[in-house]
Image 1 (tube, one colour):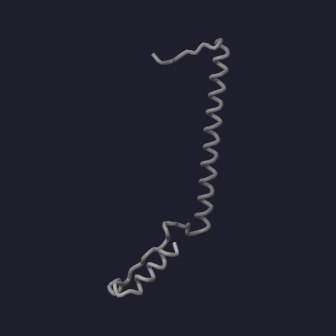
Image 2: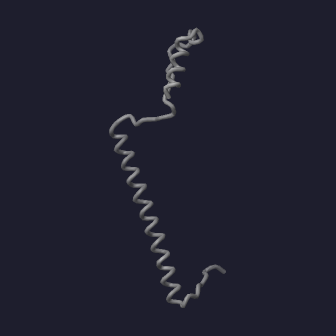
Image 3: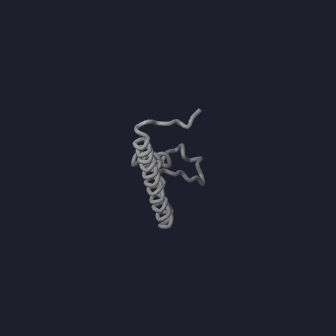
Length: 84
């Protein structure tokens, strides 16, 4: 990122930049930072929600596996398909 800033500074110091007027050049190294503490809070809330959804999904999957195992044990190990 330092090289990006140096290159922008060199450009503005060069004669080639003589025709660039009223321009904004963003040198961010492709990093975008939130604009406010509220944005940070919103992002943290989103992460918590995503983690909770993944946990619920994993728990649901585990519950389904346990149910299938229980049904298999009850049927003596025979499996049944609901597909034609």
